Length: 172
Image (tube, rainbow, N blue to C red; front, side):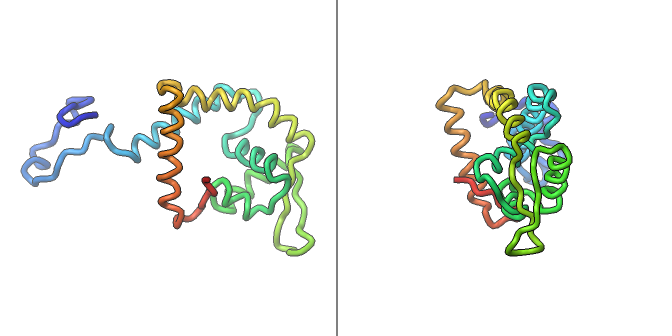
């Protein structure tokens, strides 16, 4: 929104803000708020489109990474989806319980679990990919194709600018 435009009269600065010299900052101009709202919208669209598969967005991401890598240890997978190992391990255990992922002890490091997509996991991923792609497309449907590409480039740039943060995803 441009300067002086208010989405809501409640966005007007309070007397305390005005007298303190604190510039007003409407919620709809805050990147963090907008990122959270976009995430909420996407998760909702993903749930609508992919409900029949009983797979969360995180689980779908793990299936996608395993499809691409063929096998990886849990630490590598956690980094790839930008989450902590505990959360990632829990998601992988749930996928394994459904027979979608196999987990085995690494022959070179007894502490590491090597994960692979099973045939059932590959089939499920292939079956749900069109629905997941549609959820992503609907998330940004208000934008032109060029704007969608630009938004993706900007999001990558923001993420890469914070690569020192825990839970680093490899975004290239």
